[in-house]
Image 1: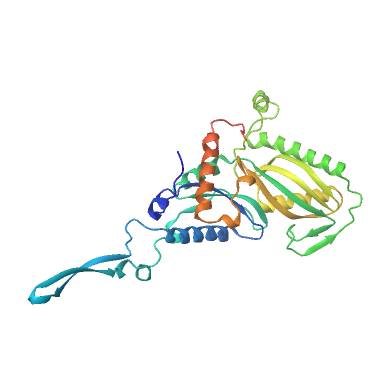
Image 2: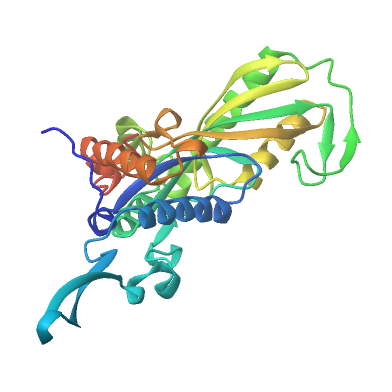
Amino acid sequence: MALQKVRDASVVFRNLNGIINVYKPAGMKIKHVRAAILHNVCEDLNLLRANNETEAHQIPLLETGGAADPLLRKVHSLNLSEHVLSTGARYQMEDIRCATVASLGIHTSGVLLFGINKGLRQSMKIQRNRPIRAYHVTGQLGKATETHLPDSHVTIKANYRHVHPERLSALVSSLQASHQRKMFELCGVDMQSQAAYEIACKGLIRPANNTQPVIYGIKLIDFQKPHFTLEIHAINESEDYLATLIHEIGIELRTVAHCTALRCIRHGKFTVEGALLRHAWNLPGVVRNMREQKEVLEAHPYLLKQDRIELRN
């Protein structure tokens, strides 16, 4: 079936339900991203024609005609009761319910999911199932900051000439192994039991505790001294946790380091390639992106309903 343009604001608004995948820029708070999207959507909705909106009405007017015969004619008159200057904008930001699936820090860019109107129910289900998120985290050797992030004061400087990519790769592999052992501890399974063996045969498992960060994968993907980039797959993580991880890696390497950039490249099956860029934060872009994310959810229904302990990601 060919798609048709809809110019009725009420029809568009009734169908504005679902999940959208937005690319959040670094240095921008989530509340500002949300406000920008809703402002543009409402502005575009108000430019559309509404069902019950009429620009002018015909009013019968009785006039005196020739030979004392009255003359009845109709004149056009603007209905001021429905004018925008009388009623205000028809659609406002408060009319649209919108919430994030999972938060991103102000320094983190990348995939950010929103649930809109009836899509809030889907966003809560995705949040409850806690799919893995993948990050590209960049660190800089030789400098440590107060908050382990780039906008903080430098507290320590150290030599990093002895750090090589082989040594860094070995360290992150060791970190991944220790976190995989932690998976079983958080699930309340004894590492030496038969149950632990059977679960391990099925693959990665989700922790019962939704507050403890767990790293499922970490590897070195770029090393250009003093900068290095890690690809991290984690659950229950936060910006501060990832920045602290870079700081601890620097200490293990007998130097110091701080995080310079964080980028979320994937949230479950929602990828950065399908994220809505800032120039498309408008009604046509949101509707189109919502349709694309609906196809993702239909192709991977377990994002809304998990029926097993192991991860399917």
